[in-house]
Image (cartoon, rainbow, N blue to C red; front, top):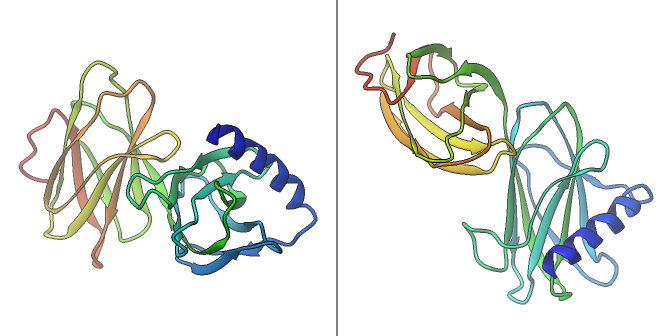
Length: 232
């Protein structure tokens, strides 16, 4: 039933977006907004590039709000929607999306249970560039503070995939496994050597490496089922 309501909402606001001027957002923006009789839902837009890893959080300030958030692509196609966040409270909602192309994207926020109130909307975005395909052979790359690097990971529906990451300088990294839509499946943070495991999964995945500290470009090495002890 909740899914049906969300689909109807997306259809209605796709039409409404052509008449109303959505609020323009940028990565890093946080705003406070309201759902009321005059504004039954929020419509926002941002410009992104192919490969950007985007996170959208809708956080209920009013305790009666039961939020849903969705994102539409350039052609008003529904890329992702969520009515319950796994990392926030049951009344909040969040989506992660790996943008498929350059363009303008639309964010839709509404109340699932029809109640009114205030909420916070956060938009995060991480630029990534493609670094290659991971295998059992070490793969090396150079990484700066930006953009992050993403590596293609062949899925294995039957077994988890252990991954080892190593840098040749002592600097902090975040390593994430995301699915083809951008939803996070695993994450680890550390310096020099980081190990994490991609879960059994039937569809394509990406490994995203983000450098968290400033500094000169450094060399990194990654490997599936590996035991890396030094950068290549």
